[in-house]
Image 1: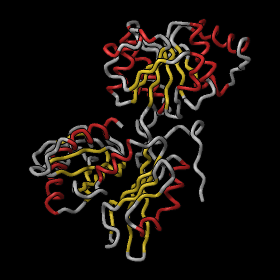
Image 2 (image 1 turned 120 degrees about the vertical axis):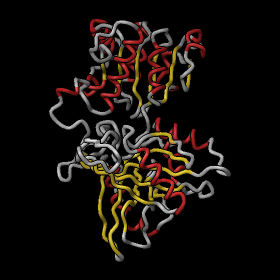
Image 3 (image 1 turned 90 degrees about the horizontal axis):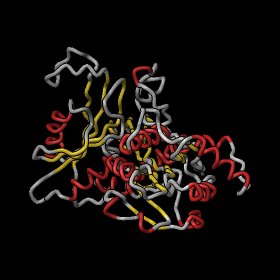
Length: 395
């Protein structure tokens, strides 16, 4: 979500009386690529851009293509083949070993359905959604750039009735399966190729404890574009100058956590209060919450004490499912010692948890870095919240 926020911030500063702009989106990747489908880049006719669609290899040429799109006021898809080390189509042999399709769309600030308005709506999602974009078409009534969304409230949003009729069922299936895809559909007038993208809310980091060592955790989470909240029952710990990057600070007594603190399937909870009794009470109230990650700072013996107290005082028998989401001691084993290093360890573990990765060395990974399907070697971004996220129902 950080990329969306950065693009929207840059867009809000454009003077459209002087400038024009376009949005580029990675819609399909076969083989290897620096960015996965769904990556976006805002481009302006003065040569500036925000976001990225590659590691810097394709942006310059995409900008030249964007100027044509802006001039013609028509969306188009550009394909880059980086699989040949000796292919100098862009002036260099990229050697990335992939084929990347980029949808480039002109932005009309007067059009309420422009792609930037769509990005704004994504930031408001509190649940999974699906967005579908046509990027190849020989159907004159469904041109490239036509879109349809299934928002986080299960509502279909599109100005195209034809696309609603074509995709209504598939949008719901993608939401249920929690796996994006590229699909070719046959219509009465021809074929259309569509990228069906999962829109997932960003990670919501909730830190219990406003100590000095919580500061680098919140700052690093902010750099990644996560929503960051800090809560403590001691108001003196919640000093704005100590947490300049936090989205929300909230004072809450430990006994009211369940009532006053919002926790969703996209919330990562971190207990780092350094107060055993406080952590006991908080853990007893959040252990059954939909949060897929609960990290507890401190040694294993401290965590064992917490579990004993849960059983003896609160009559809570910790299940295997609950143990799976509780990380105690918190963090990845990277030899962290200082608060800053510990913050890296914590944030890395949360990232690994939400992407279903082990957090090990990539050099020892036997499969591809990015998730791919087995048929066409297409790269996609999988969502891994099936155990915590209620599935949608088909009509």
